[in-house]
Length: 383
Image 1 (cartoon, rainbow, N blue to C red):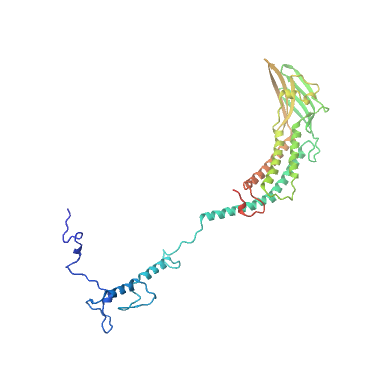
Image 2: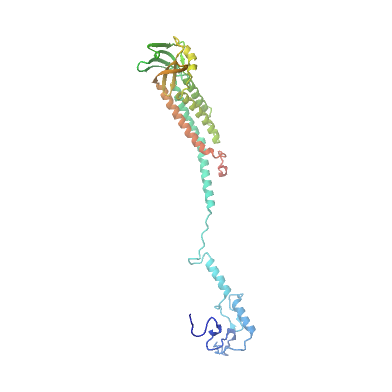
C-alpha cells in the first residue's frame, strides 16, 4: 500500500495554499500613479477601486476597438501593444489563408481539372480524328480501290477463253489425260467453255480384255458449264464497278458496304464455280445431253464426265455394277493442268483480298451509325 507524506493533494484541495496566506487579485486599473507622472507602481494595491471600473477595464481588453489607434481609459492611455484577441484571430486567419503569404503551409492547391472532363475532351478529339479519316476514306480511298479492282477484273476477263468484256474468246487448247497402268487415255481439244473434240479409251472392269472407245465431235461439243458460270459472275462484278460514277461522293458507310457486298458476292460465286464443281448423281449424269452426244454411244452401265476443279481439267469414267441387288459404281480418273485457269484463279483471289480489306476498313466506321460527311460535331457519334 502506497503512502504519501505531507498533505493529501487529492482529498484536500485547500492544501495548495502555503502558510495559510490569502491570495489577492490586483487589476491594473487599481494602480495609482504618482503626482509627477513617473508611472511608479505602489507596492500596496488601492482597496478603493469600485466594480464598475473593473468592468470597464475588462471591456477594453476583450472588446475590439473601433479604430487601430489607442483609446483612453480610466487608468490613462492604452498602448496598441496590449493584447487584442479579435485582431489576433483575424491576423492568424489572414496569414494562413492568403495566397501571397509565405510559409510552407500557406499555399493553396492549384485548381485541377476533373478526370471526367479530361476523358470527355479525349473522346471529342478522337471522334474528330475519326470523322476526318472517314471522309478521306469515302472521298479518296474508295474510288482508288474501285479503280484497282476494275483493272484486275478486266485483266481476269481477258484470260477467259469466252467472249467477255471485249474479249474475243474462242481460245483453243489441246490436252492429253492418262491414268496408269493404261486404264484410261483421252486426247481433248478445249475451245472456250466446250470440248469440241475428244478421243476416249478406257478399260471395262468386268472384261479386262475389252477396251471401250468413244469420241466427241465438233457437231455435238461437250459443254463445261463451270467456265461460263464463272465468266458470268465476273461480268456482274465488273458491272457493279462501272455503275459507280468516279465523281460521286459517298456520304455514309452503308453506301460503300452495299456496293462492296455486291462485288464480293459476284467474285466469290465466280471463284467457287471453278474451285468447287457441282457433282451430279450418276443417274442424272447418264441421262444428260452430253452423254447422248457421244459417238458411238456408251452402254447403259457406263458413263463419263468432264469437269474443272481449281486449275485442273478432270476426266472420269464410271462403271455400274449390280452386287446382290445393290447398284454400285467404280471410277477411273485422269487430270491435267490448264494454264489460263491458274491465272484466272490468281486474279480472282487478288481482287477478293483487295475488296475485303476495303470492306473491313469501312466496317470500322459502320459502328457509328450517324456518321455523315460534313458533320464535325462529336455528337454525331453513336456508341
